[in-house]
Length: 299
Image (tube, rainbow, N blue to C red):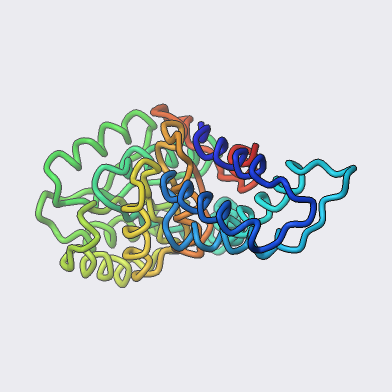
């Protein structure tokens, strides 16, 4: 996992041969490194940010005979990547406990593009919540895609969670509202609202998302991004961020050999990554730890 980007980091370290690093010495190396970031699904803005951070920290640095050149580069790279990934930490379970103490459900609204694994991710999170002894329901507010409700019901059945639904073509906001009222009436801890995944350029979809937000008043709006989506996932995250996302979940990280999506989404949204998906099973959703990512990206 992330071998390609890790190899590029290692190559950068091997390219620096001077004892005192000047701007002239490092310009070509930094440019090549920035290109390698772009090749590894890191967005242009993020590639420029990391490259500038590295350049700023390295120029004028003196590497003594006793120091290992690779260690100096490693520390610089680690700091630059950590700066991108550190967008605050979010404790979902603490938030649920706080709302539960007030007698209120925690409402989670999930948004994202087609094919990112949103429905499966919701089922995975419901499974985690059940294991932690929280009660939850899922709102089938994707009333657009054929088969979406049946797919959600199958996952929900597998993890032992009830689905609140209406028919296809129903108002998604009304489905979400029903689920929230159901949760309040029955003291259910968490409401997970599935929504339609369509192109982020679809104005009707974005208006629909805003209406769901107004009606259900979610505690968190969670963007689901596909780690294999390349630069497209950054554009999606930025667009959905217009409706005010609070955090992200990154799926298919186990299949992401390049590793750039996490850096790009963190930078684009300025919001934390909450979980990452590492497989198809219901147990394959894990809390995101920035240090976990740093350790896998830096050799």
